[in-house]
Image (tube, rainbow, N blue to C red):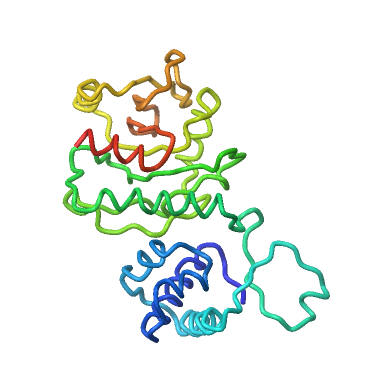
Amino acid sequence: MLAGEKESSALRVLAMQLLKKQGMSQSAIAMAFGISQPMVSKCLQAPEAKSSGDMQRRARRLASLARAGRLHSYTLFSSEAFASGNEYAVIAKGSSMDDERMAVLEAVSLAVDKLRGKDCSSVLPKVKVNIAMAVARPQSAKDVAAIPSGLIFSKGYLQQSLEPEFGASSHLSMVLLEVRKKFPNLSSVMNVRYDSAIPKKARQHQLIAQVMSNKFILSGGRECPDIAFHKGAFGIEPCSYLLGNTASEVISRCLMLL
C-alpha cells in the first residue's frame, strides 16, 4: 500500500477513527500502529476530514491490517521481497521509528497539550507558531520533530494541532541546528512574538536572553540562553525563540510570558 508523505498522516488518522468506531480500544490501536496512546487520543480527537473514495478504501484496508496485527514497515527492499505477495508501507529513508524517535514525538505531543485552555494572544506572532524537538544527535531536519503546518489558534486559544512528525518544520529545524552548534544540550525551540513586552517579561522571570544575527547565529556569551531574539530581516518577521532541553521546558517558558 503506497502513500506519499503528505497523505500518510491523514490516512493513518482515518484508519484509527475507523477502528475506534469498530470498538477497538485506544491501547490496542496504539499497539497496532506502534505509537503512544496519547498520540492515538490526539488522532481520534481530530475532526473527520473530507476524503476521496480511494482514500477511504485505503483507510479501511489499513484498519483491517492493523486489526489483524499485520502492519509492517521497511526501508530496504529486494525484488524477491516484492515478489513474495506481501503488502508493504513505503516510508521515507531515515523516517523509521525507534524508541528515541517515538519518545521525541510523544514529548512534543504532551508539551503542546499544556497550551490548551491558555490565552496565548500576548505571545502569538503574525506567522504560525510551532514547536520542534530533536533527537540526541540530529544530523538534519529529518531528525527534528515539529507540528505539520504549525499550531492553529483562534482568539488566542489553541484550537488544533496535528500529531508531530519528523521533518515538519524546515525553519525551526534550521534555527535549532544552528543554536546547537554553540549549545548542543538545547534540543527544543518554539517561535513566539517579538515586541518590547517580551524582553521585559523574560527579565521578570530571570530568563537568560541572547540576540541572534540575521543568519540566526547567537551573538551572546557562553551562558546557555532560555530565549533568543531575532530582530528580523528582509522578508523575515522579528521573532523570539524559546529554547530548552525538552519540549516541555520550552512550553513552560512560553507560559511564563503569558
